[in-house]
Image (tube, rainbow, N blue to C red; front, side):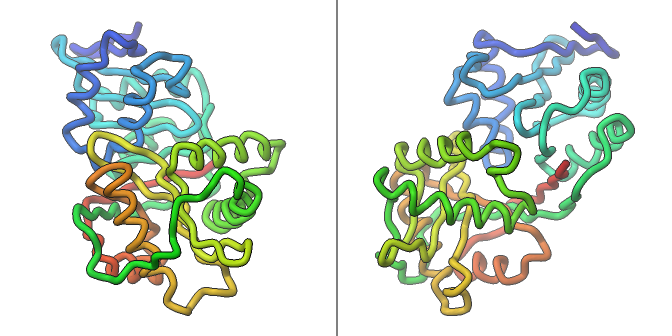
Length: 282
């Protein structure tokens, strides 16, 4: 247990669930990913996929830090960031990225950069977008949930999208089996959507997280040979409608500020700004 000023840092457990949900409820859209992990695990450490650290001041939980494949700060106060950074420097980097609300990430990162660097890329401005109604755009009715039997059709498209977006393949370093298992899990949960024509993925997207009334879309992708044909807007219109009925009434996603084509697409579909995230890739 680490103490600093009037606060206490500790790893949280199932008995902290109610307090954790109160912190996450302060911004359900920005905290969708962590809320998804918490809801799915009940803070059971075997199902959480990492650790959730909590910072309490005067006996009240005020800040969180999720540490798994990603590091995600939640509602961090200056004192909490100092305490989190102290422990993070001590244990060293275990994650492949830091992602979260821009203010939290940009205040925390300088406190650990000297021991965690170097970075591969910093995506400082990532608009967080949201919709709480269906799009006015006529949807592409060919977009549907992917069937488990189509796993071998979907995985190559997911690998291509991930490699384009992140700059490295998710199958590198022997990660192919784990990545395929994750895609299969999304399919089985009904959270993978695609337009598949003649055995080929033309458009796809997945729901990566479902929080408290909010779901987060990831992996939006149009096959390269079909780009520029206007398929992305009706495709996303379909995803929004399906996600709102099957996952959560509010649909969110985030996009790199420099991806002007994607930002225009989401604006046409009807997404509006709901904040800014920052991602640091290692």
